[in-house]
Amino acid sequence: NLPSALALEKNIKIISLSYILDGAEQDEKNFDGKAYYNALRSGKVAQTSMVNTEAFSSQFRRDIECGNDIIYIGISGGISGTVNAARIAAAEVKDGFIEKYGSDKKVPEIIIIDSLGASLGEGMIVLKAADAISRGMSVDEVADKARALVPSMCQCFTVEDLKHLKRTGRISGAASLIGGLLGIQPILIGNNDGKIVMRDKIRGSKRALDALADR
Image (cartoon, rainbow, N blue to C red; front, side, top):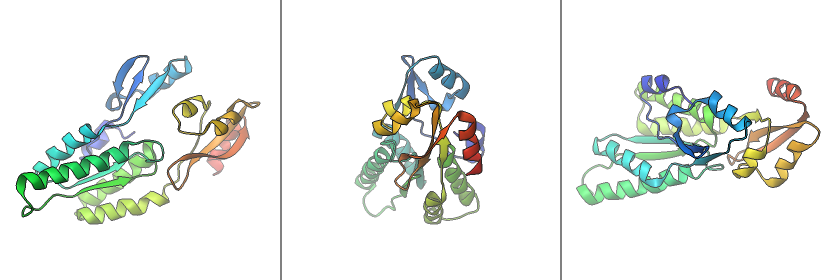
């Protein structure tokens, strides 16, 4: 959820997830939040799709052919297979580089980091990493800094309706039952494994927002 202009300014490359809304595939680079959530409220169904291995491989290959090291910081492995796909692609691309140039040529780094977060929680770690690069830190120093930030990020949120999180497997069926009980609204949190779990149950949306502000 980093604005495109900011990503461009910080020289951040984004390999986008995609989603299908009302039968039409969309690219998250052109994500319109207001239109998207209004569509969900009107009853339209959205399906998300992780980044596949080939999409990672093609981007990683272009970068290491230019001699660039890569640090990829991805959405939580607890809610998406995207980071795992990146790891598979990184291993394949590095093996291909060695096969093409031999073991005498230095292989650029491809470092994959699971943010254990999503949305702006992931984005804030990316921004810190980009700033570290601009200060001249080495690829290993930047990666260490990003990894150190992961456990310090705590994402806490609420939603009006749990049905979408349940349908996509982001939360368990048992956790989703609470959403229909007498206007009770859940407080959700990303745990240490990057999975979404219930932290609290609040009656009414205003109280739920107040609880988030208090936290």
